[in-house]
Image 1 (cartoon, helix red, strand yellow):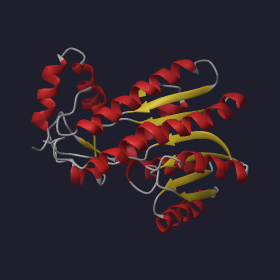
Image 2 (cartoon, rainbow, N blue to C red):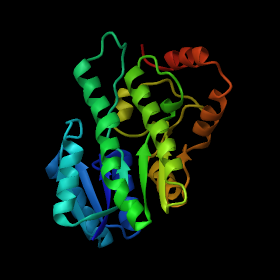
Image 3 (cartoon, helix red, strand yellow):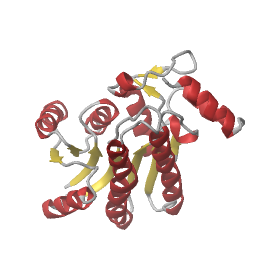
Length: 254
């Protein structure tokens, strides 16, 4: 059977993406750490959309997590048509004071596991001549992030990687999209107490997921949801990075 594999599918954007894929008839594989909650979401999707929903409980901050997922799908004969690299978490505070253990986990998750998943599942998509990969970046992918230094750095990594692979697979029938939302009404919001205004809104995760889903299906390489977020990303092109860093610092909680 063919599936969409979604990491970090328990809440927020990942949960809403699972809903969008299931609503359009895709079987899904939900990946996260908490097995009990995974089964609850899977059962919800099965009942509501009449699709198959599988679950796998794994910690993607572990170096061998991606290979474990791949071996499991191979054993089950599950073909992955779409891969959604969504799992992540937020780290905020002065770099000199934040915990290395948390930063290491974020780096391993965003810069190892998700890229390893792409490495493992992309060849099958190319062989079948269809499918896609949706990587979740951030508006922080475009600027230096004082007080969010590691988070913005790994999101910049995600964006650069996505755009490069998108070019490599151009014309193959496989699409790679970077979805780069700004402030989102999820559990991140409890941690990310950035100053909010008209230009820094908090968006609903369902709307972000809808934008990401359609961008992937339409072969767009980059999706920044929300007009205010689009304006930010456009304007930053004309601002010196030193000034961007100052603005980011001002907008963050010190």
